[in-house]
Length: 214
Image (cartoon, rainbow, N blue to C red; front, side):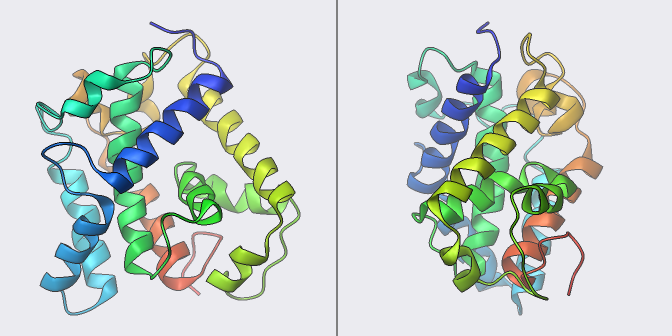
């Protein structure tokens, strides 16, 4: 198992996001997932809630990622279980961002998707890097954020995830991201998944950077 460090976390995040947006064999992209839920729902709120509930109840089942060919083409430095968990979580978050009309190929949007993995810690990162927002964090506000600040955010996200994953590997992944349950044989933690989903929903659908609906 590769020794966990910030470089490994960064590579894993980039790999997982690219696969979530561009697709893995046999799996819907984040955009396709979002469109499917929006077609079946009467509102964006309902679509996001249904997606999150599905993520909690279905994605943690064993074999969810079985047969996804992309997982065998992982960069050598990225542990397969870490990549799998991040892929599942990032696809959920990115799908919610797409529901909110965000461009998933925009690097700044990508950074905010990554921040949602930090759960309620997202608001602390925004405060730490000095972003001042009004009542809502809009798409326009995100686009005005400088490249320097985006770099700082990415560093803080990497550090937070590294702290939660641990520097010695991904043995304790399940403590942070519950979907490790079905993927690496642990126990799913629906509360954690619900938290990440709620943060993503509040940010991308309601413009609230502090995890509380505005």
